[in-house]
Image (tube, rainbow, N blue to C red; front, side, top):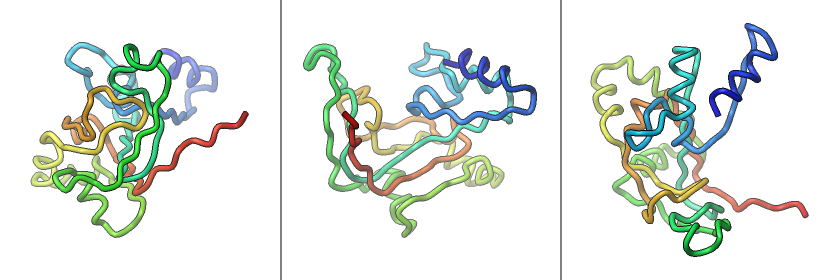
Length: 164
């Protein structure tokens, strides 16, 4: 994935920019599950702070995703999931309380404050699932504040409208 992004950037010259959208596990500057050197981590090594990793988070709504057991239960077909409320013990809930339906939180800037940095780089629990349900949980806890420069929070998701 990282090689393809580098190839696209190289095609368009030294000053080129690109935006790619993938599941948080691929975009973050981390080694996922302690073993997978994901695209975001590879791109950060190459581009340094010019690589700006943005996580996505959401509150409620309907979405399509591969279930955690897609290989055993439904032949790798998507499944529709519905979250009716945001769990109160999550960072997602805090973002929902901002009072706006969608929020862009600049983690890179917030972490210039040492106290905020300590809080944001601790494990953060968010709503889980858009893209793929890696585990059978509606929430997940990981180090988003260390791996990302920003978070886009969407209050409500909507299912994909497939064009036939």
